[in-house]
Image 1 (cartoon, rainbow, N blue to C red):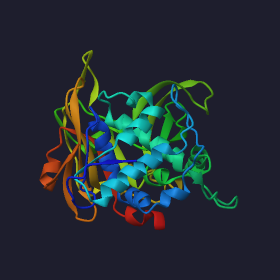
Image 2 (image 1 turned 90 degrees about the horizontal axis):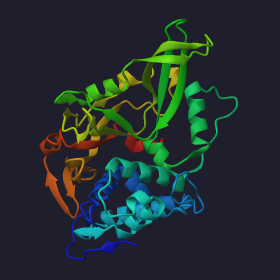
Image 3 (image 1 turned 180 degrees about the vertical axis):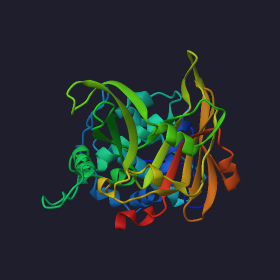
Length: 359
């Protein structure tokens, strides 16, 4: 399923991906997922074979809806080839073809957005691999957050939801009666807008994302009439893998442009504990809070044209590598930190996530 370049024999996980005509966005994401240790192990050890849903479906306008698990199968084949360590580079052509069949946006050889590609892969792999999960006993006390989680998962779970899915709580406080109303939503990445400054820290982006904001004409369930309220977000469930999307593309002064804002992000000890729901009874799942960076998708250039690369930490060697399509080279950690104005997607792994699936 994977075309091989037979010129070189290298080490496991240090293999490039050929550019198939502006497919650097895809290569960048595949390398980040390949360096997600638990996911790579799941595919390399063929654990996924028993989970494949050959007749799964997903809602996707203007695209095929019966996926027959081909997307997860092709991702598995590419990741296994990357970790065989035999060749300098491989061609992910079959993955590109299959993805294009189920998402017309990725059928062409035009440049695409790496975040949109990641969202597609995570959604489709979850659908390809999801299975019935253990339902809590009717006698087990569940928080509202957990009940909403079970409802959103529809009784299914997968390696993707186990690793990447989290839950946000949105709380609105009525400015008239002071009563609160909460809703919950699942996420597999966090899209954060950048402040209007030339430089900021990642914590600034998180705080901006969760910032309290006024809402008008909100239908208060207690007052039974439209009211003004204050809305805030916090995390009811943090996943083992937190993907942060630094939204560098947008409109400024009526013009579409890319923001080259310098974002200072930590390599270690990215602490999200202050943003968890304070009441432990309103959280559920593993209570992750501290994270280390292990992969990053970068964008260089403008909105009209550019190039994606990936920086990933090799789990076995504890070394950083730059993946630039077919070229892979070792880099110092300082080079990773220096990508502060090109970092587009940051992949953080919870410090205790290595034993996540076994606990």
